[in-house]
Length: 244
Image 1 (tube, rainbow, N blue to C red):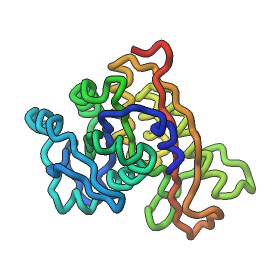
Image 2: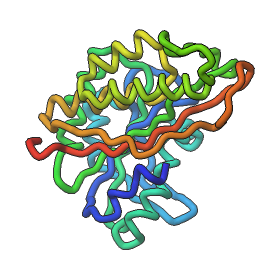
Image 3: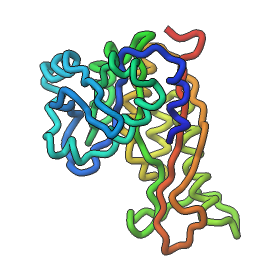
Image 4: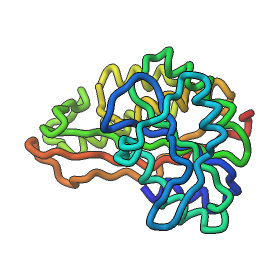
């Protein structure tokens, strides 16, 4: 995961927007934190409380219950990485806007993209998307594999092909292509909703993003049919030269 944060080391950043899935509680829409500070073993980070208030005032962003916020790892895992890459002095000025995402329809994804766009645009703003990729095996009750799998191909190779096809769908920049991939494969990508919000927002803002896959790994290198494994992807997303 650390590979995903390297480009931030040379960046001047005022606001980091982190969008991640809700793992412990299901609800309709997106939620914002009620905290004013995030504490990590490396120190504290300030929450962008002014933007949180603006989003909450729309009626579309309820406050995430504090006990759920404290239990949710999709946001908190990013924070020490940001602190390490940006450095102590930069983090004193940094504001973090965390968005926890749960159940969304396609229309809701588009609506949230519009609501978040102005807060994610700007030269000194960066967006982080938190997601694992395929959760495969009996623990997750997911056993799908590529339809064109070759005889004798290892399960680990087939799962990787499934994931890389998902990355290729995301890299098109077209949310409909990614939705079609998810419909076809039902891949258990936990952060698919934050990714789709971002893709809708990128189109809305005319960013013309390029997606660079920088690393891929799994919790289990060799996979047997009775095993369960989770895939991990690190990706750099950049605006193209022709972007807004």
